[in-house]
Image 1 (tube, rainbow, N blue to C red):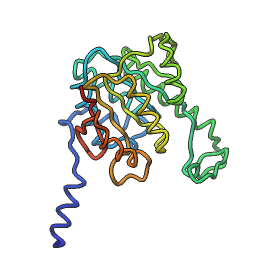
Image 2 (cartoon, one colour):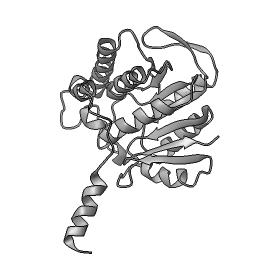
Image 3 (cartoon, helix red, strand yellow):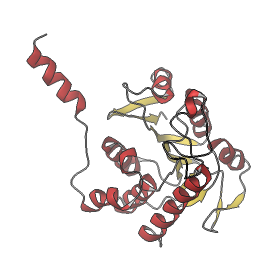
Image 4 (tube, one colour):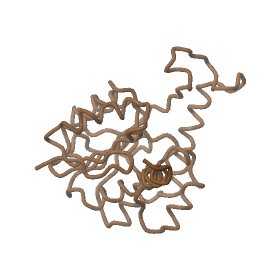
Amino acid sequence: MTIIKKIIRHFFSLRVKEIPKDLYVERLRSLVVGEGMLHRGNIYLMDYALKHMPKNGVVIEIGSYGGLSTNLMLYLLMKNGRVEKLINCDPWMYEGYTDRHGIKSKTIDGRTDISRDDYSAYMKSNFLNSVQFLNKDNLPHSFQLTSDEFFKVYDKKIKAEDIFNQTIQLGKSISFAYIDGNHAYQYIKRDFENVDKYLMSSGFVLFDDSQDSSQFGSALFMREMKQNTNYQLIEKNPNYLFQKRN
């Protein structure tokens, strides 16, 4: 293969589909903490799923961080004329860069004067402030729980109170799920299995950091998803969006 052909192939491999220019979406990145944590290709995939998902379910987000994806999906729901409620969960527990290597400390990476607990509280406050500022009339139903803890409550199909002191009936069918929690293989697999129990026919599931070049367990789990006959791959942009077959 010539050098020119290699360059062209590399260029096209980096291209992603994007939604038409939207001033609010462009501004959102500078309004909410976490700008570098949302791949621009995910915006297109979220918009597609929220536009085409089946009616009368709920939208589930696993992992909220500072609220960037939460505020984005609330906006896209409104923009696409959807009335489905957004329910999300996040423990707001800081995990350092070295945690995965078994090295833990009580402070954040690179600083000895900022505790992990204080940072976690800071991130939760960013989430609360951004959502209440940008979507005060359309708040999500947010729970400070790990995804495992969240689905244990969800399975009980009870009315539960969220961090905004709102009450919502849990256990409803899911129209679309965005999985962006712990990216280790065993957690991704379990998050998917929990979502799958409630995902409606023709519902969608989007896996963050699942692109082929990713070093996370999300990418490893995609090998199984592509073999799952109950699901159809809709788009790889570069993360994977699947739709549940009828």
